[in-house]
Image 1: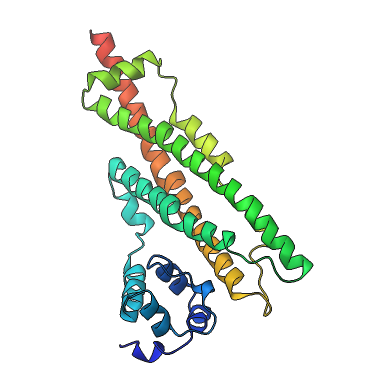
Image 2: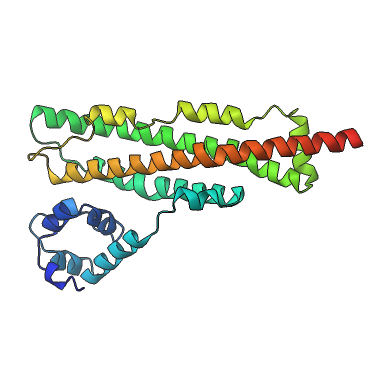
Length: 254
């Protein structure tokens, strides 16, 4: 179905009807909140792109299949880790910069309550991003690397076996799981200053889109955490038990 009848609608009107369009436009180099009355066609002409590209990007974004937990569970552990690494990349390189950019560009205007919200977001969100990125890197350097080393040891890789032996088998998946539980609700502070992403009829479109993206990001984090808790950790625990037993048996034999 053609979207040509939408080309002549004001850009902000289209965004208010479908917030996801803002995400697509951002990666085409267009920040919707910089345009008040211009139509989609006018804005696209200014940026030398065809408006059809916007809707094609929207279709591609929505056609991405969200893998069910059953499908992810059927993957071998190395593919689950690659899937989680890809999610990390999407969070850090796409989602968070988009939200951070919108917050940075929030105008200092409105009533006292709205100004307080803007100032809180500009102060707290960068700190959240910094902490989140650090947590991601710690997870990849810790848990993910440990699992990769266990897999290599099971295949007879001498360097991996030696590293596990030198650590005296002190690295445990269970410890990573406990630390993960501690970090499970990373968005709590953001929810508190936004009153649970609450909006009203008077909430500006700019903030509506920010809250919508934050809520979408939180849902993605919850699903990401569910995959780790319900799928990755059980598989990693079984792998660890098998690898340590295999190494111990080989050392006893030798």
